Image 1 (cartoon, rainbow, N blue to C red):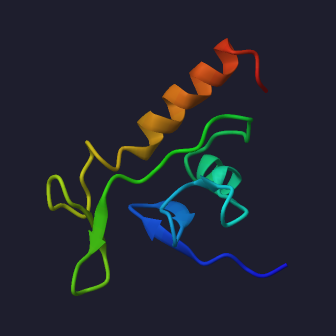
Image 2 (cartoon, rainbow, N blue to C red):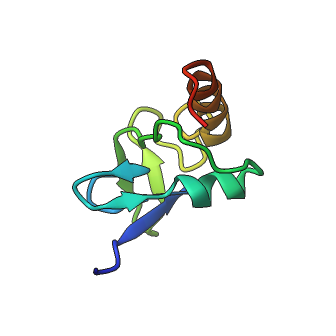
Length: 94
């Protein structure tokens, strides 16, 4: 099996081709790495997706909506992961 190309956007990992944390097309699942980075135990939760983003001339990712590389509205991964974890617990997933 080949290595999936990934990108880091504001401290979270995504598949490079689709900017998804969980991507069936790429056979990629970055939930364990991202959960661990934010201090969570891994659990079966839905994956986060990066909003429409582009790279700056310096190679950093920025959200297209606000033009920021550290946009807390678009790249608030910890908050998004926390919500997805709560939804997964409510749905009975572990």
